Length: 206
Image 1: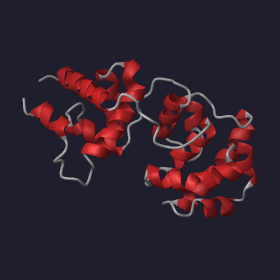
Image 2: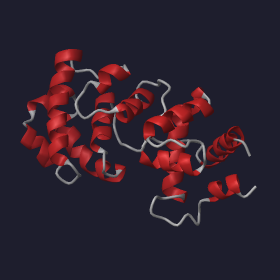
Image 3: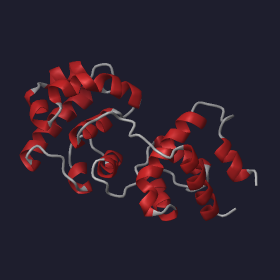
């Protein structure tokens, strides 16, 4: 089976499973999504969704976030990993959004990635989910599955993203990356034994 044939099976099967895909991180604005994705590094989406309502209640935009001291932000996010670094980044990010963008979330990869704590994956999530720009955010879970499905031989998420964009149609990127995330959680968790992972079996049992 060729890589293109495997890609088509992946698309077809994931579309059967996940016709609608909710965005995993709760938010009501691009700023809240930007903050939530930044907080999700080395932390589960579930945990971020648990702590974010209190944070957004007092700091749901750049101006209100900027009014908080770094220590106050840390107190609000203390239950998640790397809270010291994340609090520092959120404070500086709010300052720069006000200084450079009138408090609004910019709509280019370059401007997003120039913000503290915002890497390419986070920028890709915001561009795709808030602004509808075609992007294929690759986290460690998508990287693992696309290697498992032999869509990529990438040594890192950058190479995996490049390979994914070459093989999957651009109009599917925004939805497909979410479908892969949901499939991984439900059928092929990183620490599981893969008994439920029917898609991998389907791709390589033929």
